[in-house]
Image 1 (cartoon, rainbow, N blue to C red):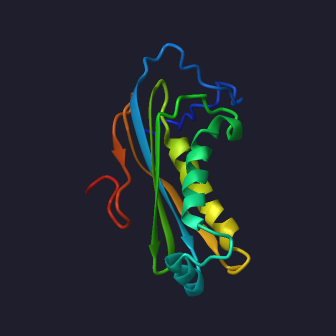
Image 2: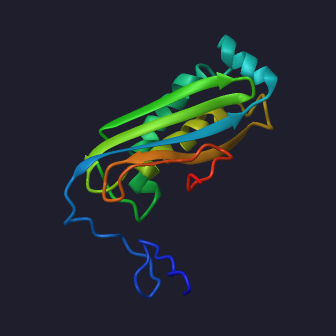
Length: 169
């Protein structure tokens, strides 16, 4: 028996893109988390720790940029729904190799906030890149991914740890 073909929710029966109609769905509390990593040179990591980056408070700018970005997803992704972003947390941690970004977005709406969480993480990372690129041309945004979601029809999901079997076997 051959496996069922994968059905992408934003494509109709003819393969044309469309916005999924969520009118009949009841609003529920939904949460999503995402992460990203900005790799930086040792000199930038030291400047971040010391607060001596020439352009100013990198982490504050990144945090506010991530929060603002979460609220702009429908402007960036044409098939995304306009939803209320009722909470957005952007946490930044300086590590030896760069900055770890963790975001969590919450809503009480008809569709999830995975893209809002991922956009918050990546735009926070882009803000870091923008503020340090003049000193560290090799700075890189990487490892952007949704790490968890809860609520909605499909329920809860948590990304397996690296190297862990996603089926739990």
